[in-house]
Image (cartoon, rainbow, N blue to C red; front, side, top):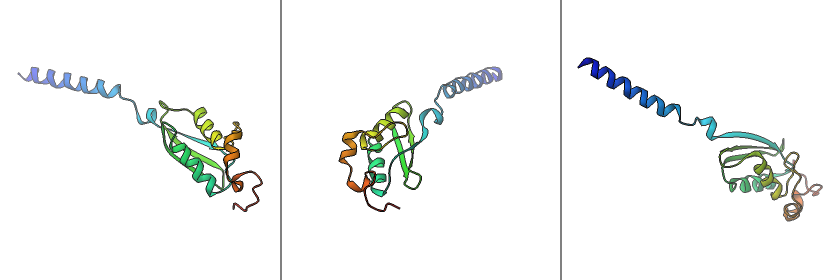
Length: 121
């Protein structure tokens, strides 16, 4: 009787353990990347963060205007760094080595373009 109870408990632990061993960790579900942009003001920040929010897999985006770096938390199963940079480029901004898309850049307000003539400090 005691032996059967012990074997049942041991088998249950092995089954539960094997279920958790195959479960993806939090690291597999979320990554973080920092991308240098050409953003220069609060309007740029709002535009980049808003457009990244519509990118599939993006959980959070926060642009530091002073450093021009956007920190993005994303699900690597749904998107990747190249797609994130392409999103920023299509919005009209440089994303590290990826230049701003001309169509997106031309849609930016003049204050958000290089040499826009406004003080963006």
